[in-house]
Amino acid sequence: MRISMISTLPPIKGLTPYTLTLVKALAERVEIDFFGFKALYPEFLYPGGTRTQDPEPVIPNVRIRNLLTWYNPFSWLWAGVSIRTDIVHAQWWSWFLAPVYLVVLAVARLRRKRVILTVHNVNPHERAWWKRVLNSSVLRLASEYIVHNEGNRELFLKETGTKKAVHVIPHPIIGIDGSTVPRDELRSRYGYTQAHRVVLYFGNIRDYKGLDVLIEAFAALDNPESRLIIAGRPWKNFDHYAHLIDKMGVGLTVKLFLEFISNSQVAELFKLADVVVFPYKEFDASSGAGSLALQFEKATVVTDVGGLPELVSDPKLVVRPSDVRSLVGGITYALNNQNRLEGEMVQLKEKFSPERIARMHLELYSTMP
Image (cartoon, rainbow, N blue to C red):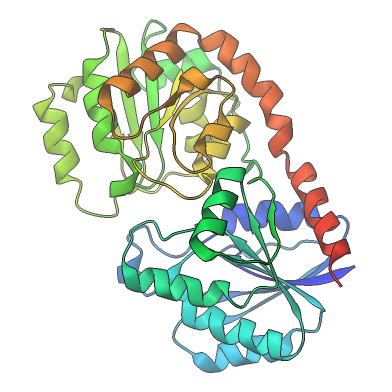
């Protein structure tokens, strides 16, 4: 079997971690013509930068053609007419790329290609009516859809009213190499004792991700040994959060890592943490950062939005969004039951293994006319 895929791979960011994981797993059983980007966004739209430090990968059975640029419509047309396979699988995540996808997919449909669209965000993260219009214009070009969980499927059907097939295929675990440094040594290196209980927030810092709620909840924890790590690039000025940390009087117990974090340091932060928290206020997708908590088998607290509840095994770890008291209860429960919860995460990992996710995609491809 041979398919075409549209997304991003290193050195471009976007959906690179997800796509690289999926493509590697799929390429063991299918040939892929990959259409990627040379330029993804204007830099002012993406405070975290648009390029990784990783080179373009070499993957057996994958032909990578980075043709697309956000500013050149001729590259969009060229990609559309260059597709040679009957099945086109496009990863869709950003309203800004709507013109690119509209042209590429419209040309593909005119050439009678079957288009599968994996919808990573049912609604744009920062919502506005014109973003929703751009989003829905791309959605109309698909033959069938993939979303990552049942909640997303229900929301997608409600939002679009589509009669086309909507398939649920989970977000795979995005694997990075673990740290070989002993945990005790890591604790000492980062300034923690073995008595400290370390809570980790990881991921880009954006309004909808609820870091302000977590800071207030952390300040309310009834545990003098609790410590908080905030690791991720702010999309806006961090002053609001810095002021809140000072206001809540927890400055001496919070460590900040607000610049680029290498994979090796990511692995260290997850290894030394006791609990990982995703306190999102609203969310209509699945979390790549959340998949890292699964990979590292960490007790995890999430809010009841999007696909986050599927990342945990115990309903007491799912708390109400924007509710400080509820979040305090979830973190306290996780800290008190850490060993059991980590064991349950080991069992939960299989559901999100890249190999299983690849098999589900291949089954879908094989059913398309």
